[in-house]
Image 1 (tube, rainbow, N blue to C red):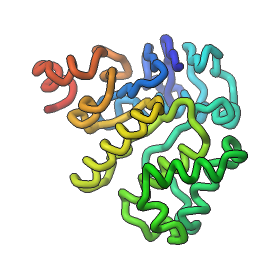
Image 2: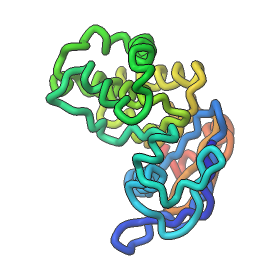
Image 3: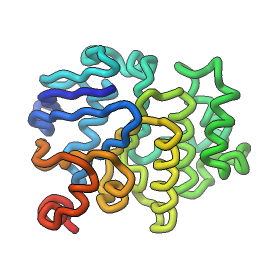
Length: 233
């Protein structure tokens, strides 16, 4: 579904990503792991066309998408749930979810709402509640639900466990796994290595703007040298 080759990108002429190769197949959870500041969000922002890469190729569903606008990429079904949730705090839960179908999925809005509520029943219970008054975990559910309203072919989740309690983190990873079991392809950017490797099919480790290691998540999770050197475990 997604194929990235020799991606070089950064900000204000400073190169953060120095030649990234990465792929996601249909039906997979693919993890991108690394500490804060290694370039995970830079990678997301370039995939989603919030920034333009310096060099390289990004292909989605067989089409080169470098040069497209972020709106055109959303129209193709590549949906990015950003770090920090970025919900609309003054809108209620239903209004936030409906915002997710402004460009894509509008015809199936009612059907998609029911799908979101089946995965996140807590959102249905709070459908008229102002989003800004919800807990961090509930806001993260809302952000993911808003992404699902766009009928994603590939869903990018950027640090979904950030700032959540340990109990809520565990629940969040179970919900992400549930989405995948229902057929959703996911690119998961995370610092939480242990739980991410437990639910993903494959993983890439980013360090200094490169991918020094990649492979099956089960293999990476059992490698003691890897855990110590790259993941700080």
